[in-house]
Image (cartoon, rainbow, N blue to C red):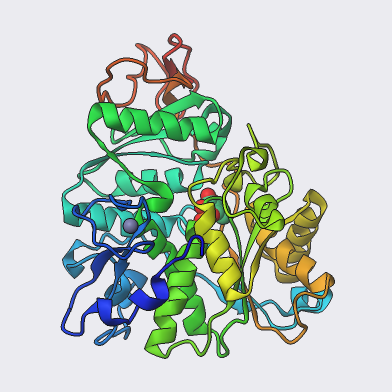
Length: 443
Ligand SMILES: Cc1ncc(COP(=O)(O)O)c(C=O)c1O
Ligand SMILES: [Zn+2]
């Protein structure tokens, strides 16, 4: 029958265990429990591990921050371990002006660009670091196209006890927006996002540090879920459609899980249709989906992708596509792509009609809704929720003390060494430094 996710049977089902008071870790593909608390993937089938919460005694009342409020649906056992970084409770509003102009009167927007580093990824850092604190993880390695890295780096810089090594394609350096700091080591990889991810994995293996896990880190998806729970709580009527721009799809998978939890809790009357949107210049998922392909094949992969929406420039989502295909198909949604003109148009119209400035990834999701409406695939009376996942960080600092490494790094043994020291007589962090050689550069 192909790839199937077992969330429906797991959430609120018998596996949840009537007397259990804490969440269980379960593979959402085969249903087995992982042996290790920090396993991101199932040792048997490679499926994603997720937290299955007992829903009998969930209380979502009050709380001074979203992590406290939604605590019973988070993968953290002790409230005392929560490390809230100020994210969440972002604006949710009816976009009447935009809706009028595009024929979507039931449009609701969730503005995640109001988070501390201007993207929904701050929620990842809050829940991710809370879980790491609880499990005693102090060092970790990760890769991203900028938003998750910036969110985590800010988190690690604002609480004590963590060190992170961060890998990013050299072309994406401008999207890393944090100051130099001893707790964050930045590696600029001469390659694209995929190469940065591979270098991060090798580095983690050789230094023995934990790989943060990206899409497969359940804490990420649980954090991203909160944007949707907040929106569902705000909306008088449940959304018929949910739109999000996708790169790996972890945000949408979190949204799907959250909606199922809310359905079981009676807080959502029905499941929305989930629509994943990509930009035409980098749309491996939309391409595969259109063909009815169950997996990403070499012909779908985009090498060294370019495009307006830099946050979602992932050319090979082979590991995660089956999850997104499953949830889009079974919910009655789809995966589609939109062109540059549509993205630019949606972004400009949003600024004009609602006074909200978002990044091109957010505008991609919005353009997806406009496209479906125009083509008659979105009914006029539909309640539509679009997650505006981020904004631009124009003028924010970039790290200047970075290791520049080639795509094969590390080839031999390597140690966790921290950021390069500033050269003697160099300008203070943030100022213009000089070149220091190939591997260790002060940029
Ligand atoms: C602004 C923004 N939107 C959307 C996404 C999509 O992320 P994913 O599909 O991995 O949840 C990202 C990821 O980097 C992002 O930064
Ligand atoms: Zn499994």
